Picture 1 (tube, rainbow, N blue to C red):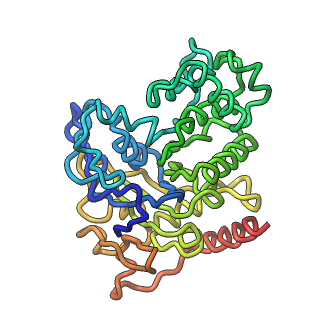
Picture 2 (picture 1 turned 60 degrees about the vertical axis):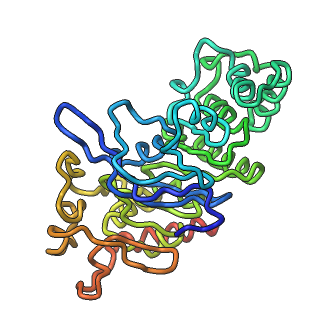
Length: 348
């Protein structure tokens, strides 16, 4: 998997959380890489481990989190070996993050221009005047209307969409090499969501940053990502290029995510969903964690975790259905319909 184009490499990462009830195995041996200039989407239900994984890249996990094994390398440097002082030099400069809720990300008592300028002063030692000039340029770049007049406004004076643009400006002001976007459009309406996603793509092209895009919604991935990693119960269960995941998914959990995506053709009275709930990671299942919710589960799924089976040079899935001894199973009919729908919409 290692490649000279990889800017970030995560290998065999394991993260536990110490709780009163016991040890939660939140991340259970995951590996992935991020290439220069690409967008990798990490998708899965809430609680699947997406945010815990990326917080570990930033060194921002909760105090009760424990790295139980593995490696995170940024430009061949081991992140997990760095102390807080060393990490603080990376955060906001080389690796930045856009969080889900702009109102909790912004300081309500500080003017937005000063908040955008602050990373420049901290990481580059830029003078106040020069940093504010750069902040104004960044506000214009992310599409804040009347930026010059609004640079001294406070967060509450902006709409939700504009606040998220300010958060993006703060994250990108130092032109980071890696940008982590953690559900950045969840709190926004569909129209604003589309504008923010388009803005991120435009800015990525301009500054050539690599993006890890975290979402529970495969619908926003189609036009955003180059590659997709599907997470379930602390493990990656399938990964591949975006077209491979959308049009040739192999894991039943990925089928479930695709099937639960509403489209304009969806019957308004029928909202498809994946039955059941994720397993308790205090005591993870012995075999495939998705087996209890998987109508295609085999006996092997309750005995042993499936390895990754190769679908193509860029596409792998951890499901016993790909074993040569397994019965042949085709995706549900509604998945095929959604694939046809997304092909049509993407080609428009």
